[in-house]
Image (cartoon, rainbow, N blue to C red):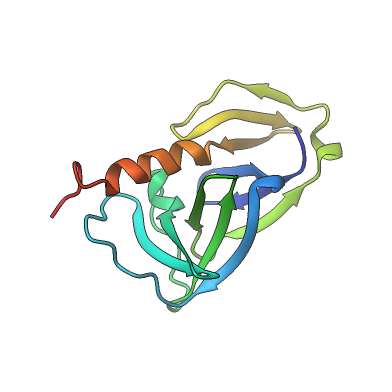
Length: 148
């Protein structure tokens, strides 16, 4: 299990392990990428490294969040080989510590791009499969599937 960062979208709460979170940044501009479509927002530079950014609201079929006056709050997730930016708009971000959910029940995934649902005290957290989102972003942006 482990500690979780929780992102509140309109109708669902998305959680991901804090060990994969490389940071949360604000970006005024996200560069357009040829072939971007669906939930792809574009690309940012993070310490000189290009990072694809997806719109987490659109990835989960939620109406786009409230406008943040041109600012994009981006949760950057990373492992050894991949980095992905999750544009969360102005969604609230909180933390749930492992101790708080030690007695929670984990159920099978209920949504695409999730690994399961943690349920406790009437709350539900959908565990984000950010690697699946990364793979889908690569597929969307690959030259073979790019939309012109």
